[in-house]
Image (cartoon, rainbow, N blue to C red; front, side):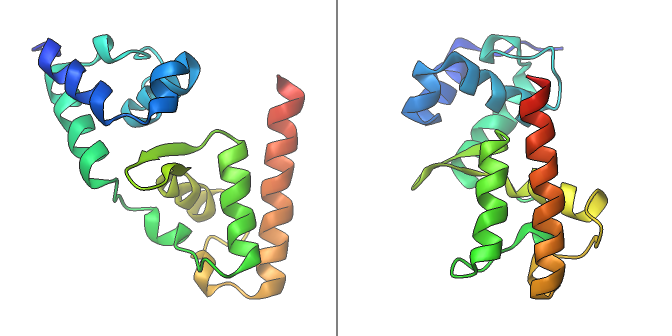
Length: 147
């Protein structure tokens, strides 16, 4: 397996948000979320293909199968509440314009596989969204009580 190159590492560091370069834990979180491998916590741990994929992702954004479940309306307070909780859980990704945003892939995966409704957020009624927010808040509470 070909290792990551110095040029790739430099490119990744240039594309990461400034906060990630000065916050080792945030940088590690981004790498782990991207690779889905807890043993890879540094850009130096990546292989060549993973580094290329990460560069592409940092430039173009991530669009995988669960993103549709997390699509939101920016003026819907229930949707923005879900995004806020996702950020509090550390489910974030770098973004060129906003620096760091909620990871819609992780949020969408949770909505599709773990929430009680398993339907895209945009398709849920206000009552259903309230129930999902309550469920998601319990996940956040459990995350804080474990640490």
